[in-house]
Amino acid sequence: MADLNHDADSSKSSDHNEASVTLLQKLVAEAVGTYFLVFAGCSSIVVNLGNDKVVTQPGISIVWGLAVTVLVYSVGHISGAHFNPAVTIAHASIKRFPLKELKVPAYIVAQVVGAILASGTLRLVFRGKGDHFAGTVPAGSDMQAFVVEFLITFFLMFVISGVATDDRAIGELAGVAVGSTVLLNVMIAGPITGASMNPARSLGPAILHHEYRGIWIYMVSPIVGALAATWLYNFISYTNKPAREITRTPSFLQGRLQAH
Image (tube, rainbow, N blue to C red; front, side):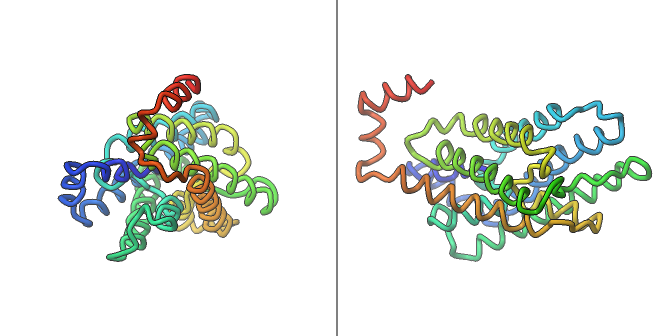
C-alpha cells in the first residue's frame, strides 16, 4: 500500500536494482503480498465471528495494521508494495507509476488474483460452521458507506504520498506510518463499512461467497479517495527546489524535529 520504489529512483545504485527486477517478479510480489494481507486480515474476522468475538474489533484492527507493516518491508523494494488497485491507479495518475507496458492493469490483476486466492484459502481452512463471510458490506446507508470509504482511503493515500513517495520524507518509517494508518482506519470505520480502502480486498471475498451487496461502493469510493489525496498532496508538496537542498536546510530539519 506504499510505493517504496519511488525513493529508490533517487540514486544510481537503486536505479540499477529497480531495472534488475522484472515485471513478472513485481507482479508475483504484488500477488503474494495481497494474498497474505487479505488472508491475515480476513482470518482475524473469521476467527472473531466463529469464537465468540475473542479477537475483538481492536484486535482485528491491529492484525490489519501489522500485516500491512510487515508486508511493506518485505516486498516494498521489489514491487513498491501497492497491494491495492486504488493505490496503483492514484500513483499512475500523477506519473509516479509508469503507464507503459500495461503495468497498471497488470498490477491490478495481480492484486485481485491474490485477494481471490486468499479468500479461497480461507473457505478451505474454515469449512462448515466456521466459514464466515469476511467481506465488506455497508452497515448503514450507501451514501454513508461511500463517504466513509472515501475519507479513510483519502487519509491512507495522503499518508502514503507523504512518507513513501516524497524524497524529503524519512523513508525507513514508511511501513510503520502506513500500517498505523490502516490500524486507525479499521478501528474507526470497521463497524460502519468494514474499512476496505481496497477494491481487491472487497472483491476477493465477494466473488468466493457470491455476496455483492454494495460492492460498487468498494470499487469506486476508494479509487476516488486515493486520487483526491494524491492530487492534493502533489499540490501542497510541489517546489522548484531540489530535494537535497530542501532536506539540508536548518528550517526543514528544525521543522521535522518539532513535528516529532
